[in-house]
Length: 116
Ligand code: 5GP
Image (cartoon, rainbow, N blue to C red; front, side, top):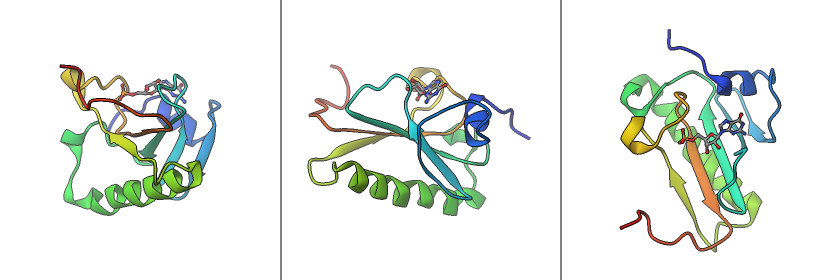
C-alpha cells in the first residue's frame, strides 16, 4: 500500500484544514500557502502518490476530481472569469506532497502557463 502523507491526515480531520468539499471519493481544501485569491487542492481520498501511479481502476476517481473542480469553480465565482487546474508530478514537475492533488487557481489573471 502507498505511504500516507499529511493529506491523509487532513482527510481524516486529524490535522485542521479549510475543507470546502468532501465526499466518499475526494476531498477539497484551501491551500495553506495560496498563490491566487482562489487556491484549492482536490485530492482522492485513496492514496495515489503521483500521476505515474494512476491505473485504469482510478478512472472514476479522476473523473470525480474534474466534476468537483467545476463545482468548486462555480461556488467560488470563477467559472466565467476562468481558472487553471494544475497537477504536478515528481521533482521536475514541482510536486512536494506525494499524494496526487489537483490545484484550482483563479480569481486573478494567472499569466503565462510557464515562465519563459
Ligand atoms: P505540490 O507542490 O505538491 O503540487 O503542492 C502541494 C501544495 O500543498 C502546496 O501548494 C502547499 O502550499 C500545500 N500544502 C502543503 N502542506 C499543507 C497543509 O498542511 N495544509 C494545506 N492546506 N496545504 C498544504
